[in-house]
Length: 487
Image (cartoon, rainbow, N blue to C red):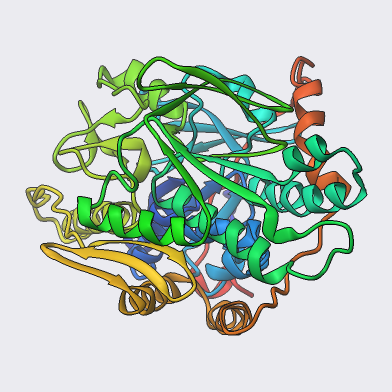
């Protein structure tokens, strides 16, 4: 090239409009549960790019997991694809992977999917990684008593419950048959009550008459809890109503009973009077406690925040970490004003964090001061728990409702928060089949569902394969106009 000719660059001039696209505010959301998904959807019209990082491909409607475990619903009805949910939200993208590190100083999130490690930078971070099952320091219980936190848990429990009846049909020893037909649910909170009620209905109605050598109605369902009442979060009268209904269905409620040991053949229980006894049972369900994601500890160590006994992070009034106004913690991971670990707290917290971020971004774009944040205020819409078909309990402020009306309310509220028209439609059809007849359409089980957990425990000691490290690509809209990025 002649020296008299200047080099020509293909790089466009950095106009203010282009600079705004290049430097769009990047919001990273960890978790695709209620808090994470509703935060992402709240930002659909915001001038930001959203990256949602989740370890599963779906958004799980966790309150209905027990219906998957007892054959009422399929997993697809309560776990639609996160990518499909956000398909038409063009400022949002999804990364599959489990977050194992957060660098608050450099604003980087590290996640891993199989052997691939991804680093994603952020301007604002919403941590909504949820909670897992807590065995109160006895994690080995999990091998024999699955919790109710994931699709895998529910499918495994379905396999164990249905499989127990099938094994009992083949057994000849009365003691073995009794052990196989004894089902113990540990924890008398909403999940435990709902699970115990549905196992009883499954045995007494759906499976009645389907076996030739056993009577499914002879199955024994035991509901255990160290607490002195059923449904501790609810008013005493509602707990008593739920207990009365369960006992009418044949459920044996044992309160003041603490599980001290648990194995493949049963569990050891210590009563409030100090008596220690043994319950022989092949199938156990654990719904006695929750523990926040380990990411809570990671955030606390870097920010100086405190964590409570359940591993939840004590956050500021605006749901942020101390010293880090760009990092929000919502849902089951945060602790504030003794708020309960329910879906509505996560939903409202996720939406609040998204609105705060959007307000700040808009203020900066307009050249104005960032508005002062108002504290997060939770609006309590009440609590509900179903006991059996046509029976539930509900508490909305001082109003307490039981029976059929509460059950209808429970149906409508849960149907409202199922994501997607198709999922709502198929759920209604499944409910009509299960509640107005003896049939249930999701009773298929496989051997892998039952044995997968034991295989995972066996391989837990293996060292993970060294994983290559990559950097997450910038969102398309950060470098291209929106219309071009979608061509």
